[in-house]
Length: 378
Image 1 (spheres, rainbow, N blue to C red):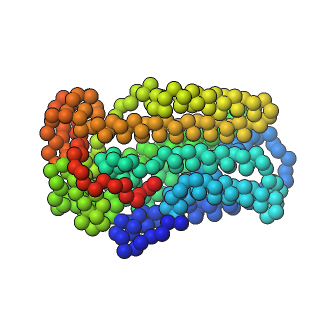
Image 2: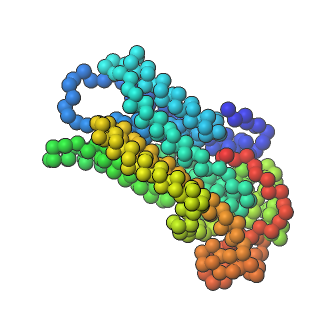
Image 3: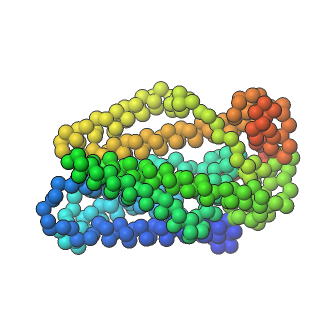
């Protein structure tokens, strides 16, 4: 577990930001234990197909992600091992402590696939080495931490996700069963989850503006939260927090434009061999694997394999984007990220400038100031 130095202002802030996630993890873990050990029905099946395997995939993957966000354990592979162990133990104990429930190897497999998919995403959130790029990532983390420090926002985001998800799932599931005579539980749950995520994202964007404005006005240190409005930066926009000593740059209080990276560039990130491996993986995980499981009568596990393929492929594309974004941002002081105009000769007062062609803001870091990577979410 991570040891906290309570004499360090940055450590105190990280500890405070982690507590909402810890509460969410504990509540979700208790809910999951109750749900998986609730007595089963002894009545014969009515023909309704349950999205059981997809639920295992989503719930145990979500539990692994919540554990990682607690900041108790920062190495994602340790989180994965613990979550997989919990998945297996949770399923095996159902045979001993639950009525009308038996352990299922398919349920264990679906849960493990969910954990592995979550782990793939956790592995992509490593901290960048270059200061400007790293501070842009920390800016987003800081805004989210401040937003989620308010319990009301957790309830709003939870309701925004859960209500449309449950409503759409129930409506689609029972309409197809009652009017078409067959069950599409996995498809119904998928539509519900996607709709819930879309509504939750909309709610997140609606809640964000006051916190974004606070960053622009108060100029906080993203490590300890101290206001640096009065901090004097050097000619290149560099400085150090007066409270915790971590390096800062003038660009961190501005949202730099996101680069538009063509898909062809993303696919070439790991070279021809990396692209070939990704192509083989997609064929096996999204097409061949699910089809073979469907043919053998394991529709639920086929769905879990399919979503694992989609999830891990998404994590890989996100990692490729982050790599290319870092390269582009590192060159942002010489070429405009938005229109690619040469801006090497354009003055950047205090490390910040504007492209004369499209007026996009850019950051330039020319200092040899201490730019070592500091402990954050690594």
